[in-house]
Image 1 (cartoon, helix red, strand yellow):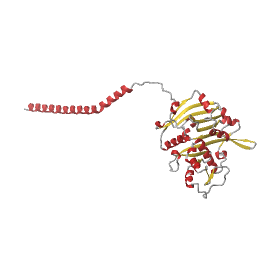
Image 2 (spheres, rainbow, N blue to C red):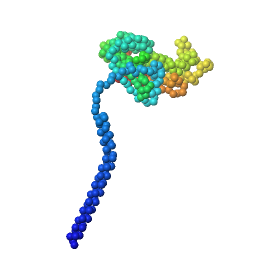
Image 3 (cartoon, one colour):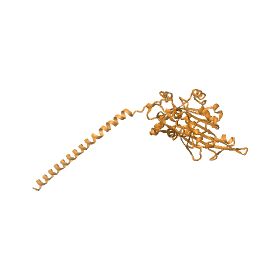
Image 4 (cartoon, one colour):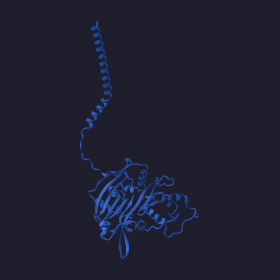
Length: 361
Protein backbone atom coordinates (compact mmCIF):
# COMPACT_ATOMS: atom_id res chain seq x y z
CA UNK A 1 0.00 0.00 0.00
CA UNK A 2 2.78 2.36 0.92
CA UNK A 3 4.58 1.59 -2.33
CA UNK A 4 1.52 2.44 -4.38
CA UNK A 5 1.14 5.71 -2.52
CA UNK A 6 4.79 6.65 -3.03
CA UNK A 7 4.55 5.86 -6.72
CA UNK A 8 1.47 8.03 -6.99
CA UNK A 9 3.25 10.93 -5.29
CA UNK A 10 6.22 10.59 -7.64
CA UNK A 11 3.92 10.73 -10.66
CA UNK A 12 2.24 13.85 -9.31
CA UNK A 13 5.65 15.48 -8.69
CA UNK A 14 6.73 14.68 -12.27
CA UNK A 15 3.51 16.14 -13.65
CA UNK A 16 3.95 19.26 -11.48
CA UNK A 17 7.55 19.69 -12.60
CA UNK A 18 6.51 19.19 -16.21
CA UNK A 19 3.85 21.84 -15.86
CA UNK A 20 6.34 24.29 -14.33
CA UNK A 21 8.84 23.60 -17.12
CA UNK A 22 6.18 24.19 -19.75
CA UNK A 23 5.21 27.50 -18.13
CA UNK A 24 8.84 28.55 -17.89
CA UNK A 25 9.47 27.59 -21.48
CA UNK A 26 6.38 29.50 -22.56
CA UNK A 27 7.48 32.55 -20.60
CA UNK A 28 10.95 32.39 -22.14
CA UNK A 29 9.46 32.09 -25.64
CA UNK A 30 7.17 35.04 -24.92
CA UNK A 31 10.09 37.17 -23.73
CA UNK A 32 12.10 36.20 -26.80
CA UNK A 33 9.20 37.07 -29.10
CA UNK A 34 8.67 40.47 -27.45
CA UNK A 35 12.38 41.25 -27.49
CA UNK A 36 12.65 40.18 -31.10
CA UNK A 37 9.73 42.46 -32.03
CA UNK A 38 11.66 45.44 -30.67
CA UNK A 39 15.24 44.53 -31.54
CA UNK A 40 15.01 42.94 -34.98
CA UNK A 41 13.85 46.11 -36.80
CA UNK A 42 16.62 48.08 -35.13
CA UNK A 43 19.20 45.44 -36.05
CA UNK A 44 17.94 45.36 -39.62
CA UNK A 45 18.17 49.16 -39.89
CA UNK A 46 21.69 49.18 -38.45
CA UNK A 47 22.70 46.44 -40.89
CA UNK A 48 21.16 48.41 -43.74
CA UNK A 49 23.00 51.57 -42.68
CA UNK A 50 26.27 49.70 -42.42
CA UNK A 51 25.81 48.29 -45.88
CA UNK A 52 24.95 51.71 -47.32
CA UNK A 53 27.33 53.94 -45.37
CA UNK A 54 30.02 51.67 -44.07
CA UNK A 55 32.15 52.12 -47.12
CA UNK A 56 34.15 55.34 -46.87
CA UNK A 57 35.32 56.91 -50.10
CA UNK A 58 37.91 59.67 -49.84
CA UNK A 59 37.80 62.33 -52.56
CA UNK A 60 39.68 65.57 -52.99
CA UNK A 61 37.64 68.52 -51.69
CA UNK A 62 36.52 70.90 -54.39
CA UNK A 63 38.15 74.33 -54.03
CA UNK A 64 35.72 77.13 -53.24
CA UNK A 65 35.24 79.53 -56.13
CA UNK A 66 34.34 82.78 -54.41
CA UNK A 67 34.07 84.62 -57.71
CA UNK A 68 30.92 82.64 -58.45
CA UNK A 69 29.14 84.17 -55.45
CA UNK A 70 28.66 87.64 -56.90
CA UNK A 71 25.38 86.82 -58.67
CA UNK A 72 22.74 89.26 -57.46
CA UNK A 73 25.19 90.98 -55.10
CA UNK A 74 23.78 94.20 -53.59
CA UNK A 75 25.89 97.11 -54.88
CA UNK A 76 24.24 99.80 -52.77
CA UNK A 77 26.28 100.24 -49.57
CA UNK A 78 23.41 101.52 -47.42
CA UNK A 79 21.14 98.61 -48.39
CA UNK A 80 23.96 96.14 -47.87
CA UNK A 81 24.73 97.44 -44.38
CA UNK A 82 21.02 97.75 -43.51
CA UNK A 83 20.49 94.07 -44.29
CA UNK A 84 23.53 93.08 -42.22
CA UNK A 85 22.51 95.26 -39.25
CA UNK A 86 18.97 93.87 -39.35
CA UNK A 87 20.16 90.25 -39.46
CA UNK A 88 22.50 90.91 -36.54
CA UNK A 89 19.55 92.22 -34.53
CA UNK A 90 17.58 89.09 -35.43
CA UNK A 91 20.36 86.90 -34.02
CA UNK A 92 21.25 85.22 -37.30
CA UNK A 93 24.46 83.24 -37.61
CA UNK A 94 27.11 84.29 -40.12
CA UNK A 95 29.71 82.15 -41.86
CA UNK A 96 33.00 82.96 -43.52
CA UNK A 97 34.60 81.33 -46.57
CA UNK A 98 38.00 82.15 -48.03
CA UNK A 99 40.51 81.25 -50.67
CA UNK A 100 44.11 82.24 -51.30
CA UNK A 101 44.84 84.47 -54.27
CA UNK A 102 47.85 83.32 -56.24
CA UNK A 103 47.57 85.56 -59.30
CA UNK A 104 47.78 89.02 -57.74
CA UNK A 105 47.68 91.01 -60.97
CA UNK A 106 43.94 91.64 -60.63
CA UNK A 107 44.16 92.95 -57.08
CA UNK A 108 47.20 95.10 -57.90
CA UNK A 109 45.25 96.72 -60.73
CA UNK A 110 42.28 97.10 -58.38
CA UNK A 111 44.37 98.88 -55.73
CA UNK A 112 45.75 101.33 -58.29
CA UNK A 113 42.28 102.25 -59.51
CA UNK A 114 39.70 104.77 -58.28
CA UNK A 115 37.89 101.85 -56.59
CA UNK A 116 41.03 101.02 -54.62
CA UNK A 117 43.50 103.34 -52.95
CA UNK A 118 42.81 106.30 -55.26
CA UNK A 119 39.52 107.36 -53.71
CA UNK A 120 38.68 110.13 -51.27
CA UNK A 121 37.55 107.80 -48.49
CA UNK A 122 41.09 106.39 -48.32
CA UNK A 123 43.05 109.55 -49.11
CA UNK A 124 41.48 111.29 -46.12
CA UNK A 125 43.74 109.15 -43.90
CA UNK A 126 46.79 110.36 -45.81
CA UNK A 127 45.63 113.97 -45.59
CA UNK A 128 45.36 113.86 -41.78
CA UNK A 129 48.64 111.96 -41.40
CA UNK A 130 47.25 108.64 -40.12
CA UNK A 131 48.49 106.61 -43.09
CA UNK A 132 52.01 107.33 -44.49
CA UNK A 133 52.23 108.97 -47.91
CA UNK A 134 54.46 106.21 -49.28
CA UNK A 135 51.74 103.57 -48.80
CA UNK A 136 51.05 103.75 -52.54
CA UNK A 137 54.41 102.08 -53.23
CA UNK A 138 54.15 99.44 -50.50
CA UNK A 139 54.72 95.87 -51.61
CA UNK A 140 51.77 93.48 -51.67
CA UNK A 141 52.49 90.93 -48.93
CA UNK A 142 49.30 88.91 -48.89
CA UNK A 143 45.90 88.76 -50.53
CA UNK A 144 42.89 86.59 -49.81
CA UNK A 145 39.30 86.59 -50.95
CA UNK A 146 36.59 86.25 -48.31
CA UNK A 147 32.83 85.90 -48.31
CA UNK A 148 30.50 86.49 -45.38
CA UNK A 149 27.02 85.00 -45.62
CA UNK A 150 24.12 84.31 -43.29
CA UNK A 151 21.61 81.57 -42.62
CA UNK A 152 19.36 82.58 -45.52
CA UNK A 153 21.60 81.80 -48.47
CA UNK A 154 18.78 82.64 -50.91
CA UNK A 155 19.48 86.33 -50.29
CA UNK A 156 23.03 85.87 -51.55
CA UNK A 157 26.27 86.93 -49.91
CA UNK A 158 26.37 89.69 -47.32
CA UNK A 159 29.89 90.71 -48.30
CA UNK A 160 32.41 89.83 -51.02
CA UNK A 161 35.80 90.94 -49.75
CA UNK A 162 39.44 91.43 -50.58
CA UNK A 163 41.80 91.14 -47.64
CA UNK A 164 44.98 92.97 -48.63
CA UNK A 165 48.22 93.32 -46.67
CA UNK A 166 50.85 95.83 -47.78
CA UNK A 167 54.33 96.66 -46.46
CA UNK A 168 57.49 94.89 -45.34
CA UNK A 169 58.31 92.73 -42.34
CA UNK A 170 59.77 94.82 -39.53
CA UNK A 171 58.42 98.03 -41.03
CA UNK A 172 54.94 99.54 -41.42
CA UNK A 173 52.19 97.05 -42.27
CA UNK A 174 48.86 98.19 -43.70
CA UNK A 175 45.88 95.81 -43.67
CA UNK A 176 42.80 96.58 -45.73
CA UNK A 177 39.39 94.93 -45.95
CA UNK A 178 37.73 96.12 -49.16
CA UNK A 179 34.52 95.23 -50.96
CA UNK A 180 35.58 93.25 -54.02
CA UNK A 181 32.70 94.61 -56.12
CA UNK A 182 32.37 98.25 -55.08
CA UNK A 183 35.64 99.24 -53.37
CA UNK A 184 33.94 100.16 -50.09
CA UNK A 185 36.21 99.91 -47.05
CA UNK A 186 35.16 97.85 -44.02
CA UNK A 187 38.48 97.81 -42.19
CA UNK A 188 41.80 99.70 -42.21
CA UNK A 189 44.60 98.63 -39.87
CA UNK A 190 48.04 100.23 -39.57
CA UNK A 191 50.77 98.49 -37.56
CA UNK A 192 54.25 99.87 -36.83
CA UNK A 193 56.81 97.35 -35.59
CA UNK A 194 58.43 98.14 -32.25
CA UNK A 195 61.86 97.63 -33.81
CA UNK A 196 61.16 100.26 -36.46
CA UNK A 197 59.86 102.67 -33.82
CA UNK A 198 62.90 102.05 -31.62
CA UNK A 199 65.28 102.77 -34.50
CA UNK A 200 63.65 106.19 -34.82
CA UNK A 201 63.78 106.83 -31.10
CA UNK A 202 60.13 106.16 -30.26
CA UNK A 203 58.96 104.32 -27.18
CA UNK A 204 55.43 103.05 -26.53
CA UNK A 205 53.36 105.32 -24.28
CA UNK A 206 50.12 104.94 -22.33
CA UNK A 207 47.59 107.66 -21.62
CA UNK A 208 49.68 110.63 -22.76
CA UNK A 209 47.99 111.14 -26.12
CA UNK A 210 44.64 110.10 -27.57
CA UNK A 211 42.32 110.30 -30.55
CA UNK A 212 40.70 113.49 -29.31
CA UNK A 213 44.14 115.13 -29.44
CA UNK A 214 44.85 113.63 -32.85
CA UNK A 215 41.62 114.91 -34.41
CA UNK A 216 41.65 118.12 -32.33
CA UNK A 217 38.17 117.45 -31.01
CA UNK A 218 37.21 120.07 -28.45
CA UNK A 219 33.40 120.16 -28.63
CA UNK A 220 30.46 117.92 -29.49
CA UNK A 221 30.32 119.80 -32.78
CA UNK A 222 33.80 118.55 -33.65
CA UNK A 223 32.73 115.02 -32.84
CA UNK A 224 29.63 115.42 -34.97
CA UNK A 225 31.81 116.57 -37.87
CA UNK A 226 33.64 113.25 -37.64
CA UNK A 227 30.34 111.37 -37.34
CA UNK A 228 29.10 112.86 -40.61
CA UNK A 229 32.45 112.32 -42.35
CA UNK A 230 32.61 108.62 -41.53
CA UNK A 231 28.87 108.12 -42.06
CA UNK A 232 29.17 109.64 -45.53
CA UNK A 233 32.35 107.87 -46.63
CA UNK A 234 31.94 104.48 -44.96
CA UNK A 235 28.35 104.03 -43.81
CA UNK A 236 26.39 104.75 -46.99
CA UNK A 237 24.29 107.18 -44.94
CA UNK A 238 24.15 109.84 -47.64
CA UNK A 239 21.05 107.94 -48.76
CA UNK A 240 19.44 107.75 -45.31
CA UNK A 241 16.84 110.04 -43.86
CA UNK A 242 19.51 111.99 -42.01
CA UNK A 243 20.65 113.39 -45.33
CA UNK A 244 17.27 113.22 -47.06
CA UNK A 245 15.83 115.54 -44.43
CA UNK A 246 18.65 117.97 -45.02
CA UNK A 247 17.85 118.08 -48.70
CA UNK A 248 14.10 118.24 -48.06
CA UNK A 249 14.42 121.25 -45.78
CA UNK A 250 17.00 122.99 -47.91
CA UNK A 251 19.99 122.71 -45.62
CA UNK A 252 22.45 120.26 -44.15
CA UNK A 253 21.73 119.50 -40.53
CA UNK A 254 24.37 120.15 -37.94
CA UNK A 255 24.07 120.13 -34.18
CA UNK A 256 26.25 121.69 -31.53
CA UNK A 257 25.22 121.97 -27.90
CA UNK A 258 21.58 121.44 -28.77
CA UNK A 259 21.39 124.02 -31.57
CA UNK A 260 20.69 123.23 -35.24
CA UNK A 261 22.97 124.97 -37.70
CA UNK A 262 23.27 125.20 -41.45
CA UNK A 263 26.33 123.22 -42.42
CA UNK A 264 27.91 126.19 -44.14
CA UNK A 265 31.28 127.55 -43.07
CA UNK A 266 30.09 131.08 -43.68
CA UNK A 267 26.93 130.80 -41.55
CA UNK A 268 27.62 130.95 -37.82
CA UNK A 269 24.22 132.03 -36.53
CA UNK A 270 21.95 129.14 -35.57
CA UNK A 271 18.50 128.90 -37.05
CA UNK A 272 15.78 129.59 -34.49
CA UNK A 273 12.08 129.01 -34.09
CA UNK A 274 11.23 132.29 -35.79
CA UNK A 275 11.77 130.49 -39.09
CA UNK A 276 8.68 128.30 -39.36
CA UNK A 277 9.96 126.45 -42.43
CA UNK A 278 11.91 124.03 -40.21
CA UNK A 279 10.19 121.13 -38.51
CA UNK A 280 12.31 121.01 -35.38
CA UNK A 281 10.43 118.06 -33.91
CA UNK A 282 11.13 115.93 -36.96
CA UNK A 283 14.74 117.05 -37.21
CA UNK A 284 15.14 116.44 -33.48
CA UNK A 285 14.09 112.80 -33.88
CA UNK A 286 16.66 112.36 -36.59
CA UNK A 287 19.39 114.02 -34.53
CA UNK A 288 18.73 111.53 -31.74
CA UNK A 289 20.20 108.85 -34.03
CA UNK A 290 23.55 110.62 -34.23
CA UNK A 291 25.39 108.84 -31.42
CA UNK A 292 28.91 107.95 -30.41
CA UNK A 293 30.74 106.43 -27.43
CA UNK A 294 34.23 107.20 -26.10
CA UNK A 295 36.43 104.91 -24.05
CA UNK A 296 37.80 106.20 -20.77
CA UNK A 297 41.27 106.76 -22.23
CA UNK A 298 39.78 108.44 -25.35
CA UNK A 299 41.65 106.02 -27.62
CA UNK A 300 38.55 104.24 -28.84
CA UNK A 301 35.56 105.95 -30.40
CA UNK A 302 32.47 104.03 -31.52
CA UNK A 303 30.30 105.94 -33.97
CA UNK A 304 26.81 104.38 -34.08
CA UNK A 305 25.28 104.42 -37.57
CA UNK A 306 21.48 103.98 -37.77
CA UNK A 307 19.88 101.86 -40.49
CA UNK A 308 16.18 101.71 -41.31
CA UNK A 309 14.27 100.23 -44.22
CA UNK A 310 14.37 102.61 -47.19
CA UNK A 311 16.22 105.08 -44.99
CA UNK A 312 13.18 105.77 -42.81
CA UNK A 313 14.05 106.59 -39.22
CA UNK A 314 10.99 108.23 -37.74
CA UNK A 315 9.20 105.03 -36.69
CA UNK A 316 12.02 104.06 -34.34
CA UNK A 317 12.59 100.73 -36.11
CA UNK A 318 16.34 101.21 -36.32
CA UNK A 319 19.26 98.78 -36.44
CA UNK A 320 22.70 100.11 -35.62
CA UNK A 321 26.24 99.28 -36.71
CA UNK A 322 29.39 100.45 -34.99
CA UNK A 323 32.13 102.20 -36.91
CA UNK A 324 35.13 102.21 -34.57
CA UNK A 325 38.45 103.98 -34.29
CA UNK A 326 41.18 102.54 -32.03
CA UNK A 327 44.75 103.70 -31.49
CA UNK A 328 47.96 103.04 -29.54
CA UNK A 329 50.78 105.57 -29.52
CA UNK A 330 54.54 105.89 -29.26
CA UNK A 331 56.48 109.05 -28.40
CA UNK A 332 59.92 110.60 -28.79
CA UNK A 333 61.69 113.74 -27.57
CA UNK A 334 63.21 116.14 -30.09
CA UNK A 335 64.52 119.60 -29.26
CA UNK A 336 62.82 119.42 -25.85
CA UNK A 337 59.47 118.76 -27.54
CA UNK A 338 57.54 115.53 -27.41
CA UNK A 339 56.24 114.04 -30.64
CA UNK A 340 53.70 111.24 -30.96
CA UNK A 341 53.36 108.57 -33.60
CA UNK A 342 50.84 105.80 -34.08
CA UNK A 343 51.95 102.33 -33.09
CA UNK A 344 48.67 100.76 -34.18
CA UNK A 345 45.53 102.25 -35.67
CA UNK A 346 42.30 100.46 -36.57
CA UNK A 347 39.20 101.88 -38.24
CA UNK A 348 36.11 100.13 -39.56
CA UNK A 349 33.12 97.97 -38.67
CA UNK A 350 34.03 95.49 -35.87
CA UNK A 351 31.07 93.23 -36.71
CA UNK A 352 32.67 92.74 -40.13
CA UNK A 353 36.45 92.87 -39.71
CA UNK A 354 36.52 90.78 -36.52
CA UNK A 355 35.25 87.83 -38.60
CA UNK A 356 38.44 87.95 -40.68
CA UNK A 357 41.31 86.07 -38.96
CA UNK A 358 44.06 88.47 -40.10
CA UNK A 359 42.23 91.39 -38.47
CA UNK A 360 41.85 89.49 -35.21
CA UNK A 361 45.51 88.64 -34.73
